[in-house]
Amino acid sequence: MNGTTEYRERMHDIEPYYNWRHLYTAEEDEKSPFYGRTYSEFEFTQTVYNYYIHPQWDDFGSRTLYLKVLMADYDAGYAVIELIGEWNDAIENDVMTLKRDVIDKMETDGINKFILIAENVLNFHSSDDCYYEEWHEDITDSGGWVVVLNMPEQTQYDFKRARINRYLELIDYPNWRTLQPQHLFHAIDNYLIKRIELK
Image (tube, rainbow, N blue to C red):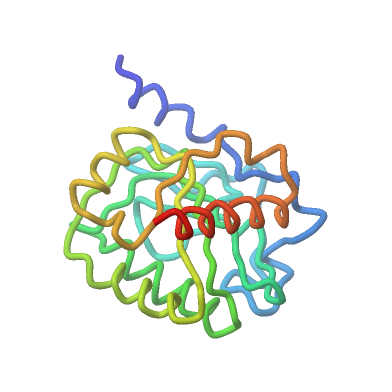
């Protein structure tokens, strides 16, 4: 049995990161696309390729990719979003659905910096890059950015091969769980500022 199969078979055990829930919950945020949602700890209904995932993940319209908004700070203008599953633009056009149904709403409410935690994104299948380009253009004039944290090596390879990394910064930051969300945001923001200064 290969590692990917083993991983998929235990996907139902992988919960979204929960240590920031005392600071923010998307289902209680009136500005959130997921406001008012309720969750079961016992009823597993969502799947990625017939493998059940934990019921705390949010469905945003993709059949293979799910997410959890771990933090949305409208004053500081950033959001932290954790992802699980397979990112499939070729068949599902996941980036279009994510952009239209989640990101656009956040941008309207003043968020222009996005941290996507992609440790549990197993594969990436590319299509055209127009929605990534649009996302990039929407936020860069206001100093915004999109960072993808800890994407698995093979998935990163596929992102780079499709040249999506022109629009999203791929960064490894394995210790993100040791930080509070505002400290993670400042660490990433400072890192990007230093990179720009060195160019």
